Image (tube, rainbow, N blue to C red):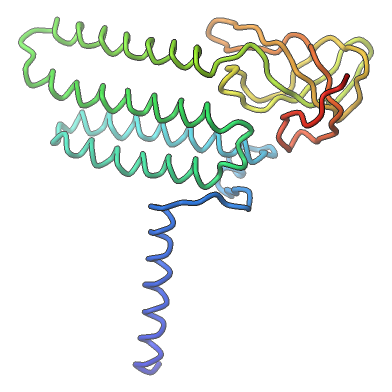
Length: 248
């Protein structure tokens, strides 16, 4: 390989890496749905873009917690916590902005993950401060109460601002007086993705989008219990379930 050819290849590599770094720091909405071969191999079922993104955010937050716990155990400078947080928040921003068009409703996800992540960062940084000044175990007990109160306050704010008692689903099967409805992950309604059986109503057809009332169940999240509206939209379970045209 000639020196000139080597320099051209080196320049292309640097340009490519620089472009990727710039795209990560300054993301813009993508027109192509996200993909993940690793997650699809681990989760042995088809994932819609919305479900894939929700799973990515959950795993990112879980990894963020684990890394922070390890750092607290090693007792490094709080600057390490800040450094990890910067990388994590940049990843959050990239995922949420880059894939904005593929969330069924992006605003609740933005508010939840930015909010709970900020509370988490404040809790870990506060713990490093308490560890320096604590003279008895009661300092830690008091701090745990403060963190618990902060989490509950954020939970209340999120439910008041974005929470709702309904969600949307797609009819996949009709059996007599009951129907099986597929519901995407819905953080605003606190509903997990999956299939739910509910009572049938009039004007149902396979593929139609329906609006369902959800019922809160402690430690289990909310569960769809009843159809309250049927929409004139035929969609598969692998597409967003927001209605486009409401039935009269």
